[in-house]
Image (cartoon, rainbow, N blue to C red; front, side, top):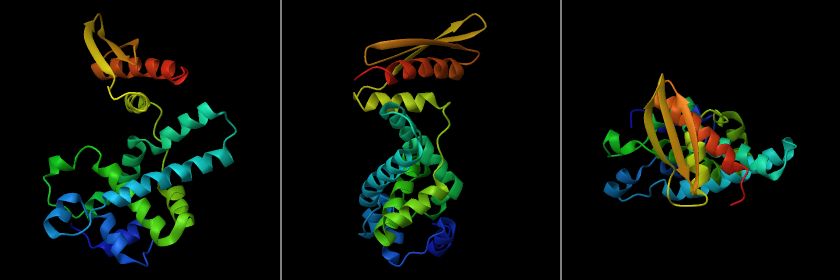
Length: 211
């Protein structure tokens, strides 16, 4: 940790009555294991549910759309991409207590940390405090992140992730993505853009298809 947790409170815009919750929220499992303390994993578990409920209630009260569209909107707010963006905006990783290599902190560490903070704020100040924090800091993920959106949609229904096959084509690349027995194709000047176009098409197909 390079910053004192009192600085973390200022970054969060929330002052904890129970400082042990603040410490637990920023305690990675690698640190907890060596020091015999509690990690933030239980808070992360709680924070995920608080986040889901808060976003669901907010959308229900403010957006006049049907269930399918509301589900799609909620996914954009609670996706890993959205949580990573929220964590990055607050720069919370600088406060994380850990004994892990930097490479081991990749993946879901950032989004997990944000969820743990939400869980800690909920326990310390209740749902209203958690809602105020989320209203201020949670940002809807860009709709263009279709690869993440597709993976999350597929993983709700199956364990096997989408499979991408990219080949060279005239003027660029062609990609075919397959998931849940359905395929879609995309083209682009780069492999990434071809994958994004294919993911977008398959996402739209599966979103409107009953599981």
